[in-house]
Length: 159
Image (cartoon, rainbow, N blue to C red; front, side, top):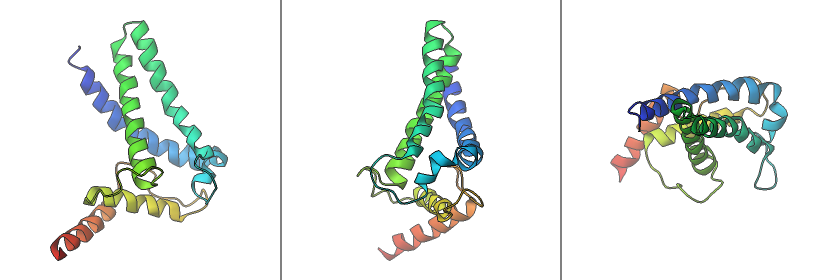
């Protein structure tokens, strides 16, 4: 194993937050709003058209891993793993924890997680594609983190 592989993975993972933010703001709330709109409205069924956006990241991830492995380009492989790891984190945070599409991770009680949920709720307050805020997933505005920390400490000191 190359020593730099995990470093590349971590840097790509962190960079993906900014790629996801830009994709969410300019693509999902832009020219592909028709695929994303059902995520901001009530709908029947488990799946959303919005779920197709996973391909935006899954395809480059799989290509980097496959083409990198077949050509011994391990830099590309680690990039693919970084994208895949971000996709897994997105699924766990967004679909499982925030939107509760599965019955896991419901009892996490930590200011960071509370801040993520609050920022996402603020994002979903707007039902149209304009005037949105909080387009990221893992980085939340400081005001939400401060509010969550205050609420968390108040709950902790009551109990």
